[in-house]
Structures are given as structure tokens and as C-alpha cells.
Length: 282
Image 1 (tube, rainbow, N blue to C red):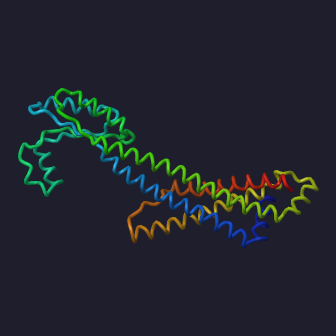
Image 2 (spheres, rainbow, N blue to C red):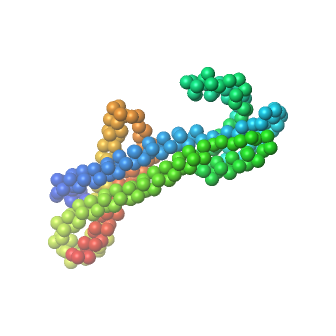
Image 3 (cartoon, helix red, strand yellow):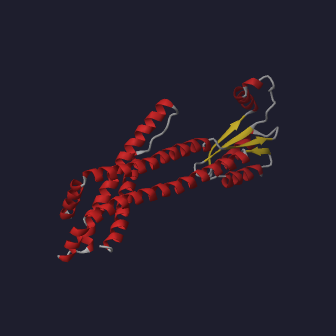
């Protein structure tokens, strides 16, 4: 391993401009991926904030007793999909309507709105199927006149989240493939430049594993350096966007570390594919 590291350092010293160019190219490729990932993270955050507002509102029949409502709230609160249950009296509903729809506050009169039970869903149970199932169970109570939860809105929200996730996976794989191709090209040039040296090493008994190791380490290091530089550029872009356009959320430490590790793995994979193919030709 020590000899492989020494050969890797020698390779960097032999062609410093090529090494810097390859690291920079990898960095900009991963930077494009980082920008897209930043957009994806903030879209998911926005969708998560919107999803947290998903609730079911069950309107109660006039004359429903307090005991009946209390018992129903206990039953509904025991549903595994439900995080919170709140009773809204007619006066509270009227005050909220006047507050949210201030331009129409003169239209609402006392006792205009019925009492209701507002149900908030747990995280992970806000998809249309789960919300619809809970709404149906609540509607089965005899004293519930109607149940509303914005079915079309929930369906569209879930569809947008699925589209965003699929687009993220597809574009992420595309950017990763581009980075692998770039890293493979730089390693291929290094292998071709040392073709005569590799032939001599084989003549003296060097194995393919021994020859391959320095190139794999080189690709691994270039991936780490490129990933770190891409992360820095993405952070600068995030700061600029937050200061001049809209507030953005940067990657967590875990995601940032995963990004650098991903760069290292992409570098290792690109080197492995390139070296393995070209060693067979030498």
C-alpha cells in the first residue's frame, strides 16, 4: 500500500496540470449535480412543510353532546395514522373564518359554521390512501355530517412529490454517469502515458492488481478532492441565492459527507472501469 501511495504521488507530480484539470472537471461535473441536489432538497423541504398541513375536518351534527364528541376524539386519537385531534367550536370556527377571510368577515354570522373535529396526520401517513382511509373511518360516526380533507389537493401534492423523487433519481444517475466517464477519461490518459512503464513492470513479474492499485488510489483521491471542491462551490451558490433571491436550506452534515463519499466512490468506479479495460490492451 505504501508503494502504491508513492506511485500515486509520483503520478500527480509527473502531470500536475493534467491532475488539476481532471480534479476541476470532476468538481464542476459534481457541482452541477450538487446544484440539482440543492434544488431537490429545498423542494422536498417545501413539500414536507405543505404536507404537514394536511388535515381532516369532520363537521358535527347540531346537538351532538360533549360526551359523545369527547369519546369520539379519544377513539380517533388512537388511530395509528393520527398525530393530533382538536375540537373546534362554532364560535372558534367563526373567529378563524373571519381571521383567514378578512375581506368576507361581514358575511359570516354567529352560528353560521358548525362545530368540527380537526385531525392532523402523522408524518409518513399523509399519502392519499392513508388520508382517505382515515376520513372514511371518521365519516362512519353517526354524528358526523360531512368530512373534508381536500382530496384533489392531497392527490396533486403526492403526485408532485413522486415526480420530484423520480426526476431526482434519474438526473442524479445521469450526473453520476457523466462524472464516471470524465474520471475514466483522465485515468485512461494516465494509463496510456505510462504504457511503456506498465509493459516493463509486467516483464519483471508485476501483477495486474499491483499495477492497477496506484490508478485506483488516484481516482479515489481525485473523486474526494473533486467532491470537496464541488461541495464548496455549492455552498457558495447557496449563500448567494439566499442573500439575493430566496432563502435556501443547505445540506446537512450527513448529506455533505455522503456527497464527498459519493465523489470518492465515483472516482474509484471510473478508475476501475478504465484501468481494467486498458490494461488488457497493453
